[in-house]
Amino acid sequence: MDKMKSICLIGFMGSGKTTLGKALADELSVNFFDTDEEIVKWRNMDIPGIFESEGEKNFREYESEVFKRLPVNDAVIATGGGIIESRNNREWLKQHLMTVYLKTSFKEIQRRLSFEQNRPLWNQEMNEKKRLYESRQRLYEECANQIIHTDEKTIEELLRSVQNSI
Ligand code: S3P
Image 1 (cartoon, helix red, strand yellow):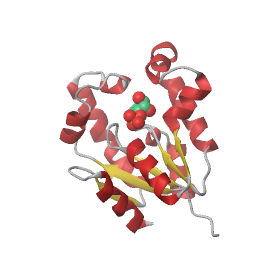
Image 2: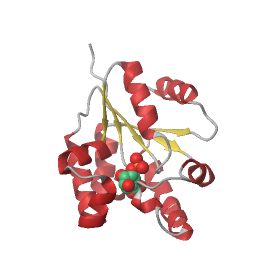
Image 3: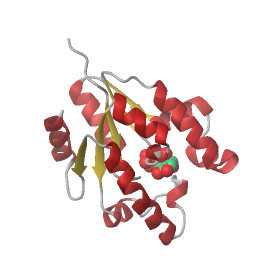
Image 4: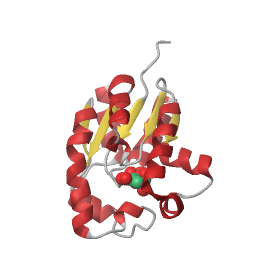
C-alpha cells in the first residue's frame, strides 16, 4: 500500500489535538503519538515538573527532539501548543507532514481549560495568555495544509472534516 504522510495536529492548548488525534489514528488504523507524552516518557517527569525544575527553554529542546524522531509516514501526531515556536519545527511541519491546524477561539479555550492545572503556560495572568494566543495564530496558519475550526463541533464532525481533507 502507498505510504501516507503522517497527519500532524497543531493548535493552541485545549484545541483537542490529543482527543481528535487518538480517534483519527483509530479510524485510519495507524499509530498515534503525542509529543508531550513522548517527553514525559523520555524524561520520566511530568510537564509541570520539567517547566519547574528545568525551565521552558529545556522543555522546548526536548520537544523539538522528540518531534523529529516521530514517523513522517503512516501515523497521527498530536503536538504541544508551542511546537510552532521554533522555526526549525515549522520547516519540518511544512516539509514532511500533513499539518492540520485545529483553530479554536480564545473564548472557547478559556471555557475548556477553566479547571486546568497541568499546563504551566495556562497558569498565568489573563493578559499573558491572550498575548500568547494572539502571537501564535499566524505561526499555526503559516504551517497548516488545512485549517479546521473546532468551536461547537463534535468529535465526529471534526473527524469527518479531517478525513475529507486527506
Ligand atoms: C504548551 C502546551 C502543552 C504542553 C506544555 C506547553 C504550550 O501541550 O506542551 O504545557 O506552549 O502551548 P497542549 O497543547 O497539548 O496542552
